[in-house]
Image (cartoon, rainbow, N blue to C red; front, top):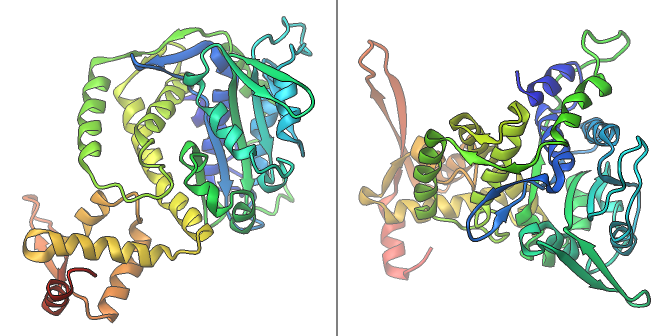
Length: 404
């Protein structure tokens, strides 16, 4: 059982969505390992710092996972924790100052910090450059030694080996306020894991003590061990082969993404893979399991993130998905394809639930017809494959107009 598995097990009676706890756990690992570990990308070093924002409607229990991550990192006490309302200037000033620890450890001499907020929109006091600064500080590889910031009245602040991580929470309305439309394509969203959920993991009135209770000291014990690990990650041969194959396939696929999330997706997968490796043990080895799981969980977050950011831009997710499907059917041989192939090819645009809405909309518009085929498996039991077929009138109209 990995450390993340332990987090999920100890919180199984909580109503908060499990994906929130999963990413809160990754965030905590990211914070405590700090500058100690990295993956050599030859042209640059990839550090495992991540930004995470949990997004969902009010009442979805976003706060407990954020609080858990904060408590765990504070228990380890090897990085500065910024919680509550603050200004970006105050955070920079604190990062530039050596910090003593509560547990007798040596002072923190580099500029490491963990930003925590159960309401992201109120975390950073209004400053039009705050998200730009957070974007710049995220890229640790560009600031290997120092990062300089010239304040209006306080002179220059120099951050030594800056390493910033973050976990926050927001509903969709407040996310729109915190990340305005002009910031969506500016790089902050592309560097942030926006974890969207629609429903609680279950119902629990908590009138009785749960069978499992989170023990901060017990969970933090392994994180304290991780905080002492140093060095570069190494690839196991199967992991390297899998990543190479996936990378080449991903690099050839279509990426229609205004935020830049998919352009940075390959590095995002590697960051998560390093954190999953650390969740398993301290060997600093990337295994095929780490890469497989990282691709899975990163692929799962993209449709929800697109839903949040498209909403912030005033766009309709289903409308955008309809356009993607129509463009594809216009371009492929026979002007038809299976639903399963569309989901594999355009996983970054929509998930299976959203695909149902897209198909229904296209059927109502009489733009497609649906055909089913029984596919044998060789074991006596087959499965039904659904094909979407472009209506000839749509193709004729497109050929005349030259556009959708």
